Image (cartoon, rainbow, N blue to C red):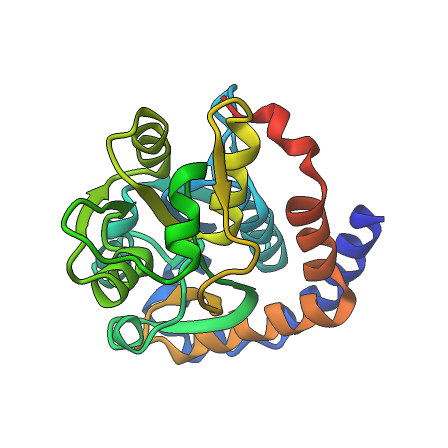
Length: 267
């Protein structure tokens, strides 16, 4: 079913590409066409959105979406992995063509890049040991003895600073390290997007980890592209709109957010 949807979307988007005004292409679009490659930046540590399998392959909803975009543009997909906090800077410096890494659309980030989407909605949640979750559920995130881990440079870290200014924020370079710290009792909990938090509970069934029934916030996620290249933004936006219309995005959400069989591929 997913392959049929991808084929239909590919045929539709190929027709869109035929009318792309390359004569007026911006820097990013010009680079993609000349190099024959779409370079996508990702942290690859946010399953089920983006991660590396035990064989080292890039996988996830964001990776599948990146593949679909590259196929529509008739170019090769190149994935560049780097810490989440460095992604937008790399985009600004022209090292990558877009960021697809579970990036929440915020006014501050919109000052550095422009966003296509949202292609999905998420929200902030917390994973903690069972004895601490009632405290978090009641909204009592404060306290000198409360340590909360969050991905460095993420909206999760910003959320902790806003919602729990008196708690100690422990910023980490990847969510795997944050989960380890929760299990070891080094921090009170980890704040992250809901899919990441749910995965932490599923992967550690004997650690006594629990999370909230509902996320604390609702956040739209988008694809970050160069704010100065309107042509490239328009092209990607047309693709994403077509993917939504053909059902490809719905199929990807079901594949990665409702079916847990992919967990077996994790290291």
